[in-house]
Amino acid sequence: MLDPHFIRAQRSLVAQAIRNRHVAVDIDVFFTLDEKRAQLLQEVEKLRAERNARSKQKPTPAEIVGLKKMGERIKTKEAELSVADERYQQILLAIPNVPHESVPVGENETHNKALKTWGKRPRLTAPLEHFDIPAVKPYLDVERGARTSGARFYYLRGPIAQLERALMQYALDFITKTGFELITPPLLVREHTLFGTGYFPNGRNEVYAVNPGEDNLFLIGTSEQPLMAFHADETLDEKDLPRRYTAFSSCFRREAGSYGKDLKGILRVHQFNKVEMVAFATPKTSWKLLDAMVRLSEKFYQSLKLPYRLVALCTGDLGFQSAKTIDIEGWFPGQNCYRELGSGSNTTDFQSRRLNIKYRDKNGEKHLVHTLNNTVVADRALLAILENYQQKDGSVLVPVVLQKYTRFKKIVAP
Image 1: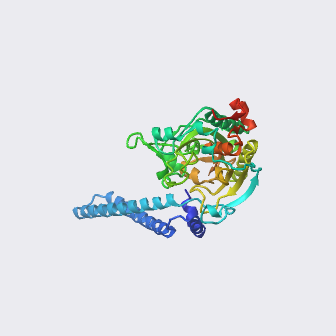
Image 2: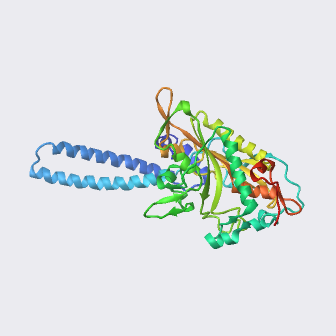
Image 3: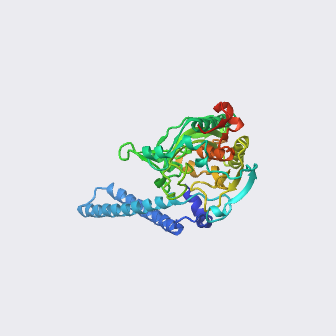
């Protein structure tokens, strides 16, 4: 959430950011409501003060009638203020973060900017997509997944399940060696956590609600959500920053806007596993930390020898809470294109303002922290491995760095 004082002081900047992001927020209505709230609040406070002053003396019958009428006026004004404030808060919560000056301006993903490519694409005469590779097909069961849970669910079996587990464990080992503390987070969170991290109200349609009306809990779409809420309503010491955490978790997304997309295989699903890293930093250090986290992702994929590219998301493709996002996209030879494997974002103080996470500097003054998140690896990287390491005979080689986890070097059809 943006600071209302910042919005007032930087009206043209915020208005331009909204236009560049192509979101449906009427900033003029926000300022109209802002002025109306201030005016109504002033009127209510003036009426309350006048009533209190007149109530201190023993009122005459006529004055009692006047006080009752004043009370009715106060209730009317308070009702108007409540309506204006509710609408004001709705618009405030709908205003996205202001993009960093380095973010390319564009309408959608076609305007994203490629920053770097790495790795040699495998020379395959007729590369197959992951679901058609002979060594994969027996161990990837989408039919039973759909029968059990519905479309976009699946079972992984045998060596493919082992390879997926190896990939996740390797990611955790890789990241924790760099100083990120491992945390096992809850998979169910309360509504205020999703509001606090900026996934509500805009992204409510993407989240699975659990037992609404009773528990009122929600399945996480990323471990970023509970990890960010870990320090909600806390004040950290500047000397202890940055705080860096990582987590492995299952993630759940409705994929409400993906009807008809990526129907084959398991590229786009409702449940997947992911290793995420998050950080809490000062405004002075957050941008260098974002670069460092992205470089960690690069080193991870380089160790897997997976071809990838870095992409700077344009203003129209940025996540709601992000000020800047760098995607890492892996090469999928079966699809002859790059697909997103993960992304690193600096949300500045957008989430920390909602979650009330501050730090105390050496002078004892309190400031909002900057929060960052970056995907180390998700199940989609498994698919990139299967496609890039497929062989002419239909088998799949295991990346060298994963072999000590799988204890086998090749996957073959049974």
